[in-house]
Amino acid sequence: MIDIRPFKSLGHADHGWLDARHHFSFANYYDPGRMGWGRIRVWNDDRIAAKSGFPPHPHRDMEIVTYVRTGAITHQDSLGNKGRTGAGDVQVMSAGDGVVHAEYNLEDEETTLFQIWIETDRPSVKPSWGAMPFPREARDNAFQLLASGNAEDGALTINADARILGATLRGGGAVTLAIDPARHLYLVPSAPVRVNGKEAGARDGIAITGETELRIEGDHDAELVLVDAR
Image 1 (cartoon, one colour):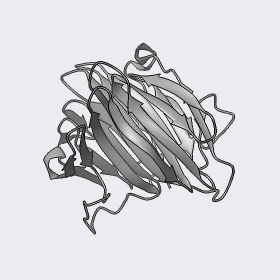
Image 2 (cartoon, helix red, strand yellow; image 1 turned 90 degrees about the vertical axis):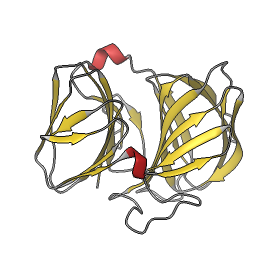
Image 3 (cartoon, helix red, strand yellow; image 1 turned 30 degrees about the vertical axis):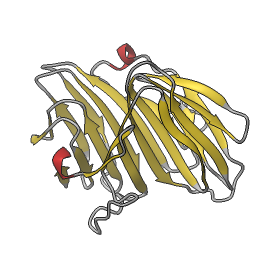
Image 4 (cartoon, one colour; image 1 turned 180 degrees about the horizontal axis):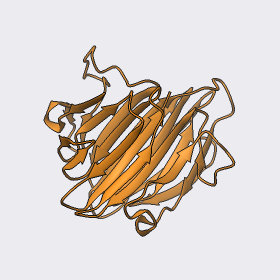
């Protein structure tokens, strides 16, 4: 099953400094048919104005992945962590038994990012934060693992049975990936693509289950972000 959720159908909130699109029910956006996808609970497509951001606020028992599309985000938290994550790179925060964090765009330009929440498999553990660079040229027409629940795979680690992958699809090319039909995958492309022959637009949400392989093709360069979860 491949279900295309058009970008124009997503939840929307414009706070001035933050223009957010919600793939799943979040804050004041509620759709009983879009409460999550498997263990994926939140996927927000955020545009954050220069010199603004999210002030300190708490979380617990959630795996929070931030994929920066353009610009950069600067993180700081109650554990003493602080770091800047630039375009194409990823940061992860396991909220564990409780953490307070802030995310600021300290740049002179708008920052765009995906914030993805995955339900944790290890509630009430010690919270943690990490970031890692992932050069986009290393994933031309191939998926690269960015984060997962396996601490031995060389990517960022989260406390969930999930994988976050990124790829750069070159126009006229294709990306393929073998997948488990029992799992729940969610894909967002930056430009129009065809997923197993089905047409999807830029920044549409693509919910996938019951498939054994993905073949993603496009006529234009596209950045692909994919989450594979239970």
